[in-house]
Each structure stands twice: as structure tokens, then as C-alpha cells.
Amino acid sequence: MKNLKSIFGYALCLSMLLMVACGGDDAPKRETPPAQLELSLNVDEVTSSSIGFTITPNDKSATYYAKVYLAEELGSERDIAKEAALLIIDDVPSLGVKSFTATDLKANNEYMILYFGYNDAEKRYTTRYFVSDVVKTAVADVTGALELEVPKNSVTWRDASVAIRPSSNDLEYVFGFMPKAEWEQKYATNPNAVIQDRIAGWEYDVECGIDYLPELDTWQKYMYLCQMSGTRTISVAEYYNLRWAEEYVVYAFGMNDDGDITAYVTTAEFATTTPVASQNQFSIEIGELTASSVAFTITTTNNDPYFVSIQDKRYLERFGDGKTESWEDMIFDLTFSKTDLQLSNNIFSGTQTLTNASISKNVDSFHEYQIVVWGFDNGPTTEVYLSDVFKPANAE
Image (cartoon, rainbow, N blue to C red):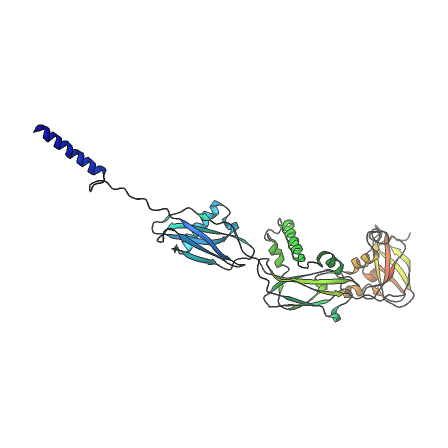
């Protein structure tokens, strides 16, 4: 009997142990950890100004945030953390499968999508930060157009008027000028290549000017200085120095503040007038000299107008046959920066006895000079004549 009791007691203890081991009602329960939140990103549609994407979470009850940024804004872990914190403060969380569309983006630019899980009630992140691959917006559609016209009656020996008519008043554009020979050499087969050359020029301006103009730190900011909008008529001479008897091309293209092309290059051609040759001939005789003055006589063979100048001998040695610069280069150099009124102070006709004061020119006894004369009527009409070399000095 004693043995039976012992066996029964042993069996009872074993039964209780088995109940605990098998998870009986009184056994401690283990908590199942929550499933890790996963967010799946799919980029849907990309245009020149928008990016569409869809976020699919594996938990429909979990909240998350998502937003598109310029790639440069997410350049470091610190940048990403900062933008995520601001996103939580400023935006409303999303729930479940959701499609997003970021609009008003810059064309032909690189973007990234930042997305992550966050529980607002518990104030905790439920995923790490996720950043998409770079998504580049498309090149903007070119829908604008420009029209250029150079009225024939506006062309002179060194100026012309150009009418610019954009397809809409808010179309911003850039224009420029160059000799026709240069245009045909560089851009005849691809006129739009001039746009990249202009951009390269603005990039060079940034490189050269960043130390003293740090606010102009992008080529677009230099481009702004050239931008115009609306219909207008411009004087070429206000922007570009023209020569007589030369063919030119004026071009224009549309470009917005982001540097996107909004209208392809359009061009117009014109030629400055050619001066009528004169048969006038000149002889120049040096008269009285002092330390600060010279008198001289110009004898002509007819009454056609001519231009008179006094120049340092060293300057004049740059020009002429066999030199790197021609006499026409000298005439251009001495006239392009003067207004018509200023030019008139140097123009005479017939035989004249003049002094340096007659043409508002100062001379001194430290330099050697020559009188320079050429026929002039809306450009040079004769060859260049030079006097003998002289040096101002008081008579002994």
C-alpha cells in the first residue's frame, strides 16, 4: 500500500510538470514581437515638372512620411535626418497604400524621395530612413517662339534696330550679335549650339567673379542680367559695337530662370551701310610748337568731310601694312566709343589751320606725336594720312 501511494504521488508530480511544460493555464505566456514595418516604393510617372510615386506598406495601420527633394538637399546623413525631422513637424502622416505627385519641379534636374515609418502617438521611428535612387525630371517641352526683324530703314554705318516679338509676354529670352562670318563658321549647321556657348560664358563669369561677387554663385544668376521679356525694339549699338560695311547676325532664344530652354534659337541678318569713297587727298604741315600745343594746316583737294586726330607715335606704330592691326582697325578703335556729337568735334571740310585745342586734345613735351587724317562720311572714305613726327617744345 505504501508503495502504491509513492507511485501515485510520483505520477501526480510528473503530470504537473508536464502541464507546465506544455503551456497549461498557469504557465507564463511569451509576447510575440510586432512585425517589422516595411515600405515599398514605386516611381510611377516622371515629367519635366512632376514626379509621381506610390508607397505600399506591409502594415495598413502603420503611419509613414514621404516627400520629394532635390538630390543635393539629401547629400549627407545629417541632411536626411534634418529633413525627416522637419517633415514630421510640418506634414501629415500617410496611412496604407498611397500615390503621391510632387509638382512644380525643375526640368532636367535630379531628385530623391525620402520616406520612413513613424508612430506619432508613440513619438518613435518605426523604420530607418529610406532614400530612393536619383530620379531625373525630363527636359522641358519647348512651346515658346521668338520672332526677330531688322527694318532696313533703321540700319546705319554702325547701328540698327531689332524688333523682338515673343509668342507670349511672359516668355523670357536672351539675345546676342556677331559677325555673319563667325556665325556661319560656328553655328550654321546647329544654331542652338550657341546656347551652350552662352552657358559656358556665364559659368566662366562665375569662376572669375566668385571672390568679389559671391552672391552671383550660379551661371543662372549671370544669365538673369541678360534676360528680357515682352515685345521690344532695341538699338544694337547699345549692346554691341558694329563696323561699317559688315554683315551681322542677331539671334535670340527663350530661357527661364532655371536655365531651361523655352524657345529655340531664331536669327535675323543685316548689313551696316558702306561709306561712299571720296577722291579727297590731304597734305599736313606742322606749324608753331610750344610745350603744350601744336598748330598745323591740312590742305585738301575737295570739300568732302574728313576726320582729324592727334595720336602718340607709339600708338600709331601698332597699325598699317604688315602689322597685326590694319588702319581700319585704328579707325574703328578711335571712333566706336564716341557718340555722333563727339565725332562731329573731329570732322572738318576744306583746307583748315587748326591746333590741338581745336579737337580738344592735350599734348606734352614728353611724347612724340603725329597728326592723323582720313576722309570720313558715315565711315572712312579715303586712306589714312600721317604727318611728320613732332614733339611739343618751347621755341629757343
